[in-house]
Image 1: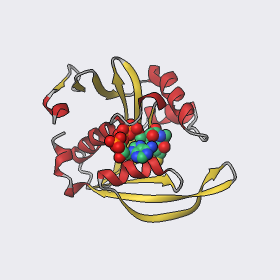
Image 2: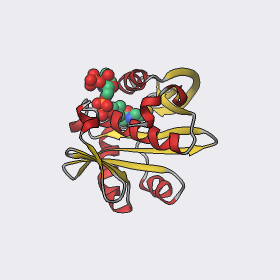
Image 3: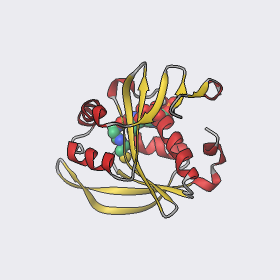
Image 4: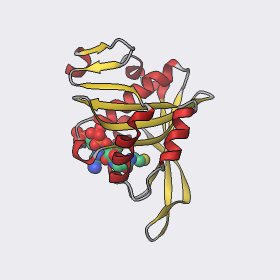
Length: 173
Ligand SMILES: CC(C)(COP(=O)(O)OP(=O)(O)OC[C@H]1O[C@@H](n2cnc3c(N)ncnc32)[C@H](O)[C@@H]1OP(=O)(O)O)[C@@H](O)C(=O)NCCC(=O)NCCS
């Protein structure tokens, strides 16, 4: 409630909220974004993959706190669906609502782009991320067996879906 009350629109239409701001990811953000990615996963995206997302038709967003990037999200929106491709929060900034805030912001933008649902895939072992998604209302709709490389072989991806038409609160974040 406090978050919403203090939100204002910045000059570039970015969402500014107290000391936090969501804005477009830029090429010059990549070193910070890569650092967060590499600190967070044993199978990080490459710089080339981030560059291709920046050059493509994706929602690339960063969350800054006091001017420093603490989290990022990459998504695509097409044929009425928002697909979350990557979301990550710096280890030192976790459990303070950063990923939730980025998701809410991207859902709001996706609804404006006529998305009716959101999809994502998550490692079966990633219980923290699964708790995050379940808490936002995502429901598991499938499994991709042995989808991800893992330290000791392969790991299943769980496929999650969120009906954005049942989430009017995201339209007004
Ligand atoms: C998963 C991740 C993005 C969550 O980011 P975050 O900013 O810490 O998440 P939030 O603070 O918005 O969490 C919101 C809620 O989700 C749940 N949650 C998030 N992380 C959790 C964890 N590690 N364990 C249990 N619940 C968790 C909690 O309910 C939390 O609310 P609470 O802190 O009030 O209990 C972050 O841990 C991360 O970057 N992990 C590494 C990369 C990754 O796994 N990305 C997802 C790939 S599918």
